[in-house]
Image (tube, chains in turn red, orange):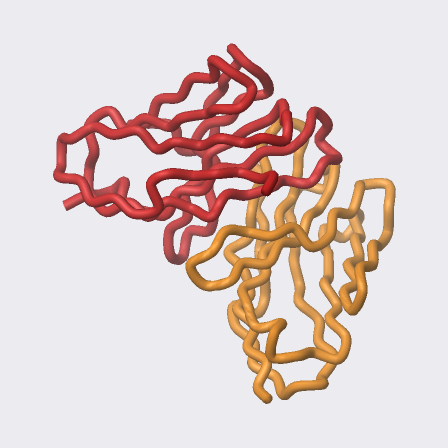
Length: 113
Length: 111
């Protein structure tokens, strides 16, 4: 089925460890983005990309790194995990135009101890 | 800086009732206003997208309106059903690529 696939669904890390959350879409969408969702805070944009080779920062980029080497994939890297990064992470994509609807993945729940 | 507010934070209604969810935004310079549904432990599903030039959009029992001048949008759900129970989020798309979300309204429809 076409859509946005996120892996892993659940992950537990220790403080200081690094990891990569994977995001892949098969809809040939130009735009991809990462959000985090925290209780009482809503969804906040971490990083986004408007095409292969182009990335930009969102509202809360510190502690995260992204790259976009292909249209399909947009991985999110945690460089040195901190308890404040415990959250649910969502990847989303849409077509080229702002008027296009965002399609979300099912989410990745990350716990940092 | 755009801020999006949703009131109420939670709403409980009996099955069959018509209801309205409210969304307000501080910066009227938006490209569109989107409504999403989120079920527990799941991702977000797009319900309706209203372009800035439009006043409303309809899909089945859902109707969303947009009043840019007052910074408000409403989501009307007709004849609510238990399957409508979920958290509903609105989001404002501004001039950058950034979509600003409200914190959501948690809807419970009781049989």
